Length: 390
Image (cartoon, rainbow, N blue to C red; front, side):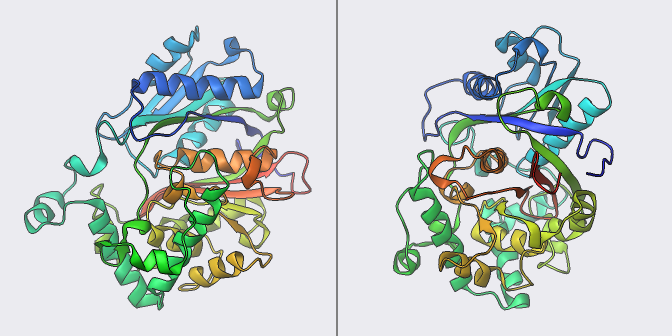
């Protein structure tokens, strides 16, 4: 095991999550606290040891880390951070927790995302910041599905991907969700049902789009040495990375990019795999950000799991029972629900700890999880402690 900074020296020790719903009837603070407590209890750690809390939010849709620390009864916080971005941030926040621990700023750090994303403030109803906003709103390019649909269409033209590939992603999500008690879309979808789904913004149909929900999700990060004294098998952070590439912090920033088949994953994957010491061919479980089916295809290809335009074929091989990397066994954001990607990280943790329940992938030792659907995002390469790769 090669130690590079915090890599192979820090670990995710547990994950916790609330029930997902369309109307929680609860405050965001209550959701955040419940998810954090769930992670604490799963780890079997003394809460007094926890001295860091970090989170992320968009448009002020959550609650501050310090408030969550206070509500949990944590005494002395030595590291807190609230990051002002969305779905690109979940893996990045885990990276910050690991960096804080490795640098001596904290011993144990909670990372959470909580929001009433369906009954409260919804992403599509807020005006985004960025230089392109004043230009695209007047012509009706307002909602995120519209922006992503344009990019997906161009990706399809340039790579040869088709709506059958989008359908495969939606079918795969539904198949995982049928076995997932947390998922809000638990009806299995076939090709006929997919093509009967109405268009939202071509080429995206309703089943191509994630489900906005209320809920909270958290993971707990410690040093690897501390993790080995806790209840569950540590999930070692073997590699990680963030990339921003030609992005102006407007939701439509990726539309000015000249290579739509190469999202942020393409730009950070060499660093990620170089740190981890393994490549895409070694990944047992890929828990990938998939706010839209097109985003899933691009993340699969961006991180090298398939060649450009071949992500749909990989998914179809998986659906046919071939021995390939398991893609989003929980149903992903498409079927489980949209906690801005935090639940995608949690699923990777549960898979490697062997506690994923009905969606468990047999003998999962390595996992890739990523956060983001455009030109900025983050990723983690994770390994079960004690596997040959550690």
